[in-house]
Amino acid sequence: MPNRLERLISLEQEISRGGYPDVKKLCDQFEIQPRTLYSELGNFW
Image (cartoon, rainbow, N blue to C red; front, side, top):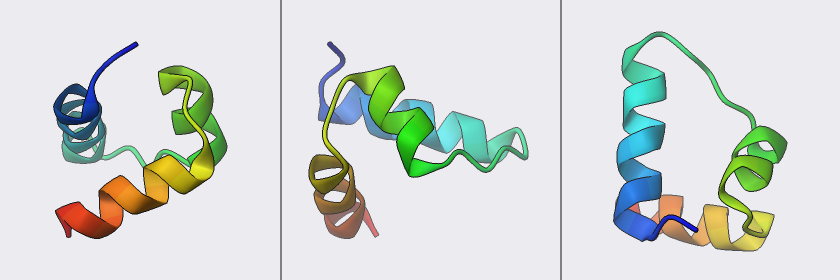
């Protein structure tokens, strides 16, 4: 399972390529709960 930094880098790369990943896709990809994702994004932005 990727750590927080690896998840944020992956998300940034997806957005830079013009992608717009959704919460379900990201949670499935990283095997995390939506709450974890929202928490990490809230701390990142």
